[in-house]
Length: 497
Image (cartoon, rainbow, N blue to C red; front, side, top):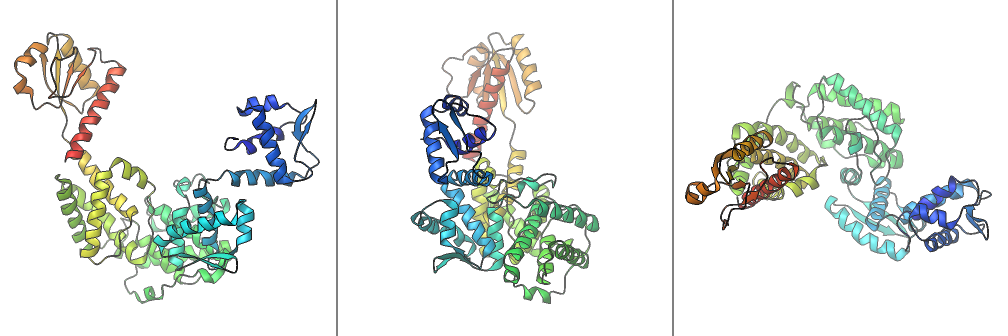
């Protein structure tokens, strides 16, 4: 079976050649058999039809048909890309295109032809796409052999944000097209410049990830209006009655919308001013006057409740003086995001779940309790990920240093050398004592509380305390072994806590 990407690679190789080449040379460059080369050529030619895109001539070899339009070669490369999409990636692309078109629909035949799959495959995709959309209260709607997505505009924008990778523009210096649909380069540069100018007007820096959230919101609103016009308007008339809007932020939001109108040649309603205002207000902007500096009492109460419940469930002490200010600074804008339906995507979520699984699970459990206690909307797992970071920091900070016992055959000379090297390379470890093997054997009870014994020779019949044999010179292999052992001990202590 041809390896993934071979069609595209073969076309790229042949594109660089002006004359015939052999199947053997192509096979060597592609790291496949000559049979695979010929089978891939047949597949390409069958897809493209007559005349063949790739010519094969006995005694001459293989080359591209230069008489065939260049467009056909480009078209086939795009086909090769689509053929190599995983099913999940294909569903992401289809869902994203339908989201941008909503409430308009796309002809089923167009989807089938674009992705070169059967209708039965699309039927199966629909079920899984619907399952994914349900988390945003959206659904697929199929009518007259057309497929579309139905739901609230704010939810549609949240779903688009969840499917699009904006991480490459975090420093606004490069464009990353890792998302399901590549970003429009011109839009990226405009929005990046707009945010820089907004920061200058407010004389602040919008911190990560809130800069990415605002960026994605503006990118999505521009492209939604381009596709469906005023059908993409968000209904937020109830926000107009608010009397506590911060004048500085509102003026900045209005200025941003005016710039977007000029750039995109789109008529945007005043609701978009309010929505961008909400994004600015929901960011951790520290040095503005007025409402952005005011900390509601409920934000303080919720932060204290997080600190109390998480510490109790983790069975660890949490320094309120250190964690509460940061928690409050996060909870205050989080409450705004929850009330305004703003989706804060956490790019580190999968890593947080993996590295701090226990903390994340506890925070998620506490979030459900807090949502019920304070009558809040459901707190998304992205927000739980952000909150988990603060507690992970406290756990890391409060972790006691491991006590190390250094043991050698005599306890003199080599043991002292080993001590010096450990203190230099592993300053986070606490050396309890340096003893001879004999002295240790005679006073085991004295050292029963140490976490690890590092010795230059094996210690017989020692099963109670973890121990590791290392060289007195403490080479790289010894250092790696110590790091691995320490990590194992800390992991066990953390899991048992």
